[in-house]
Structure formats: structure tokens, C-alpha cells
Amino acid sequence: MKKYIISLDGGGTKSEAIAYELDGTIIGQGYSGFSNILINEQDAIKHIIEAIENCLCNLEKKDCLFLFLGLAGYGGVKDRKHVEKALYDRFHIPFKIVNDAKIAHAALLDGKDGVLTIAGTGSVSLGSNLNRFVTTGGWGHLLGDEGSGYWISMEVFKKITREFDEGLPLSNLSRKLLNRLKLNEIDEIKRYIYYETKGVIASNVPFIVEEAVMGDLFAKEVLERAGQLLANITLQALKNLSLHSSPRVAIKGSILQQVSFVQNAFVDAIREKHPTVEFCMKDVSSTYGGYLLALKEIQKRSLSNS
Image (cartoon, rainbow, N blue to C red; front, side):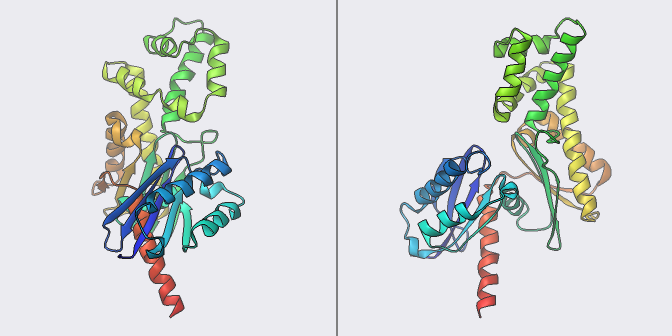
């Protein structure tokens, strides 16, 4: 059996583990639930182990050279010893854990320099230049996440609050959204906003997009503003890294990849500042980035041991 690497992309919803031979051929896959330790450490660790075990199902564990994990929220984890001990005790395979944005960056930019902007429930830009990494955005929903699915939905709910406060008739968009969610009273709206998860609130985006397509001006304006705000954090990352000449910019996440109003506004704003920008818009698993980074890690460790 050939030697291989397992790369895991662990997000706030699911975990994807892919086994790559050293030439990049995929030979195994495994999936499980969320891997964000900040949500629930015990369940996240269980899902990480489960995804890797599912990936190993038809493989010889002894032939696995390295585990490379990209986990959502990992930068905010204070005590990492539990997940590290669980991996070591269960697999006895060398491993490294980084934030999930880092493996996505490597995957979409083929391990080269540039900026990756991710916009799903939240938003963040991660850039690299000559082994220097910077992050812009990624502050979470209380401090930022501008342009994200959560932000888009909240802009519509803020419009609803203004209409209630000013005694205005509800707009067509507001009325249809409240009817869709069966929210009739102010207290019901408050309970929805303060007790539902960010993911549930962000799940209103497809409805907002539908309304924009049908001609709702406010919905269209919010989506285009989201694209401009995502461009702002991207441009700041490029500036912080001094990437001025034909910079490379990649995108990931449902908001930037699937919502044309957002993507078009994003592209236009970037091109206005950097006319020769190269956009990387391919749809590739983030685990591929973990595979590329694992190869470098193996080579580095080999050199240090020789």
C-alpha cells in the first residue's frame, strides 16, 4: 500500500476528512458533524475522531504519514490539550492543527501568495506574502462579520425594527420575511434574534436573494453592500501585505460563490483598486490545502531530523 496523508476540514456544521496519496490522488473519504471546539468541545472532538476513522475505514493506518487538520474557531481556543491528546491517543500519527481558513487559503491559491476571502455565516480575509500571514475581518458577529450571511439577514431585521419604531407600514420585504418565519409580534422577533443561532438567522439569505432577483431594491442594495464590505477587508489585507502588482484573490463560501449580486459588487470594487487582479474562483475542497501543507510539514520535519 502506498503512503498517504489525511487532511481534515472541520467547520461549524460538518467535518470532511480526505486521504491523499503523496501524488495528490484521493484514496479515502470520511465525514461527520461539526468540528468547531468553541461550539462544544466534547462533541467536536468526537466528530473529528469519527471523520478520520471513517476515512481510514478501508486503509492501513500504518501507511498514514501525517494528519493535517483545519478547524473553524481554532484560533480562539484557549486550551488545546484535550483535542491534541485525543488525536495522539487514538491514532499515534504525527499531526498539526491550524485554523480552517489557512487550509482553504492553500487549497484555493495552490499554496501561493495572495488573499482568500471567505463569506458564509461569518466572514474573514486571510492573506500571505513571503511566509507572512495577515487576517482582516473575522471578528465574529458582535464586532464585525460584515458582508456575511448573518450580516445580510440582520440588515433586513434592522430595517424591520425601524419600521416598527417609526410607525411605518411594513415594506413588502419585511412583511414577507415575517410571514415566512411566522413572527407577528415584536417580542417574537426579539426571541428569534436573541435565541436562534447565527446559522439559523443567516439561513434567510436565499429568501433575500429571491426578493432581490424579483426586483426588491432594498434586498439588492443590501447584497451589493455586502460585496463592497467584503472587498474592503480584502483590499485591507492586500495593503497590509504590500501586494500591489497583479495580486491574487480567491473566494470561498456560499455568499461570495453563489450570490451574484454580492460577487459582482465584490469583483468590481477590487478591480477598481487593482485592475490587474487575478481572481481564483475554482471550487475545490479545503482539504486539498491541508494536503499541500502536510507535504511541506513532512519535508521540514525530515530535514530537521537529518
